[in-house]
Length: 565
Image: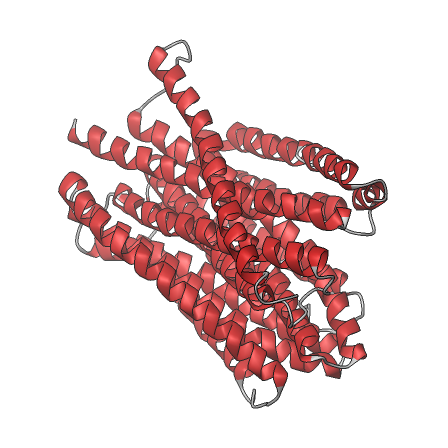
């Protein structure tokens, strides 16, 4: 088997997908000439979003350059190089995705007057372009660097660990920074606008309305995109390292080909959302199911060709099934048509305290089934292929990543479009259209937040598997004082990080509220929402990347220390 020829398939597919995504984005942007309030507000949101991203990534770049120099001195040139490449691609992917989103928002709002299907197609095609670009970059950068190193006769896949570290670092900045910004803007807009001034959602008289729209882009597009991108890269790096040590070239080729086939399947699945239907949620689900089925079929064929066995396919299938099950469970707990949400609505009738308690109850309960799904996936994967099987399960989970990112991006796109409709005073029919799409978008955003957590969980298990393989560690002695100290430190860091993020949100919101009150002269659900938002959109998701960052740091140390021995 010619490894170089097989590995070349992955970056080739990625480049073709990038071209397709560029065409989709061009078709969305083409002919956007318009005038009036909607264009004025759209340009303002775009300007503020770009300003935020430029400031954030300038700060990140300065920090990354300093850290790259330190890594070069401590671990060598190639680790510093891969770290820099991972940082650049993570930032660039988030930036490009956000630019596509802020342009798609306006076109979606404009097309709302032409009916729900036209508006939906515009929004989801924008999300599709973002999903394919982010995922395509992930495959391109990992496979491209491996091919480059192989051509230089550096065939050790562990040289790629810096890639995941760089992607995780930028992802942490994007997720934390975007989360703090969006939740501070959201809280201040709600408390002052809705509660104190009695203004409607996205009322242009609320000074925080624009900041709230900007926050959706920098938090839910750039933040989520960087989050999933780093999990994607970390998982692929771990799969290549473990695969090379166990199966040689076959172990490297299989995850790359599976993810490449998933990229194509996601593109094909997006075409199934382009039929006319008033059941938008069903259209999105059909696209996901088609992508999952095609990826499963392709992974079975690849498994038989490479390994002459279907064991690897069974593991990939467990990961794919886990994604579908998680989507179903999340939809159940977040859909306004289902019992959990209705119970919170009913509890709101009795006041703020019961509303908050009811929301916490449902939230805590909702963790049970996803945890069982993760446990079953990991145990089944280990049964078939040991530690390598766990990394393959993570690969299967991420194989339809482009589809899930499309769904994640669709949510903030229609949210922004709905805001533009409201702020510009569009006709009532357009408002009803966007309200319907926005309701579906809230569910897809929730699904993709759970998906982002899932990718992080499996990516971290995959990284830990690679760490065990690199250190030849067979057992972990939990009675060792050093192990106990490490476990307690890890537990402490999660609470400390959440505390710092929530405090930052509170301080930023406090400053914004004081400023808003200068320019404009109590509902239980609004108060409950302002408490829950920083937890689910800022503190919680940031933990995923933070844990992966620690895992990548441990893997870098392990590969260099044991290589020296």
